[in-house]
Each structure stands twice: as structure tokens, then as C-alpha cells.
Image (cartoon, rainbow, N blue to C red; front, side, top):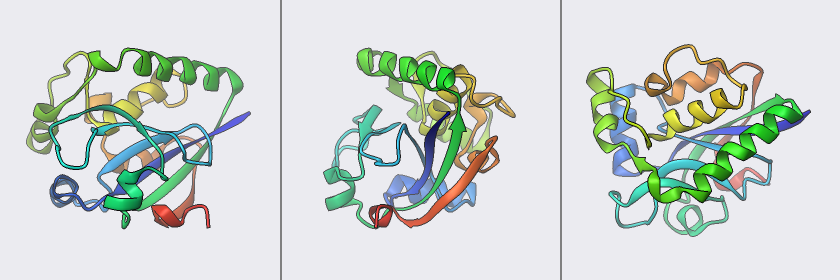
Length: 176
């Protein structure tokens, strides 16, 4: 058996504050980690500090400048999920495919705002963070989604099978 981690984050960016306002939920961003060092988080989001529109598939860790210098007050809830070795290896293969083909995946800005008021139209290779994490967990056989991945929001991860809340607080304090 292996353990993976789903993190629900609130960074305090303008976009995250807007998402929080519309969803009425304290967290607006979702990340996935394969181990409890949190040195590599997988998600969809901004790639640079300054340009919110330069976004897509990203990997970063809690020791990255993104969190240590810019968004050091990020709050989070971390859920631990126990999975089989087979599920783990399948998840790793899926994530490696995203890493290998990073340029073909895009952040779904259009879908992000449509989600607030309407049902989003699914576009191939376009994701928001919650949709991405839900999709890879589903494809790896870890989570049978309660609804389409495009409709999953950060709050829905609280109901993830066998997920245990193991930490809630400041992201940078997680390993203290």
C-alpha cells in the first residue's frame, strides 16, 4: 500500500479570492503530491509570479519561491489517501505523460469562469486544478467521481474515498 496526498489551498491571489467569493468555500486551489515531503506538487495553475495568464500544467514544491517568497501565507488542508501499489504505478504513469507532453495541456480560463454560473463544456487538454486532480485520480482507479470531472470543485475533495484530513493550517508550517 502507498499513500498520496491531495492539498486544498488558498493562496490569496486575486483569482483565488474571486473563486472563494463565488464558491463560498475557503479553499480555491487543488494539488496532488505523491509523498509527504511535498517537494513536488502537481496541478494546473500559473507558471510565473507576475503573469496569471501564463498558466497550464505545473509542478512545484512547498520550498519553491512561489510559496516561500510570494504566497508564503498560503493556507491549506491536506488529505492523505491510501492506495494500492497498482493504483500508485498507474498514477505515476499518467503524471509522467502530463510532464512529457506539458506543451499540449492548457489552463481552461474560459471554463473557469463558466463554472461559476453554468455547466462547463469539456475541451480536450484544457483543465482547471480541481478537474485535473479529479481526472488523474479517476484514471488511476483511485476515485470514482460523484460527477463529471469538469464539475468537480475543491470542496468535493472532502468526500474523497478513504481520504483522511491530516493537516490544516499554513502550508509552509506543514513539516514543522
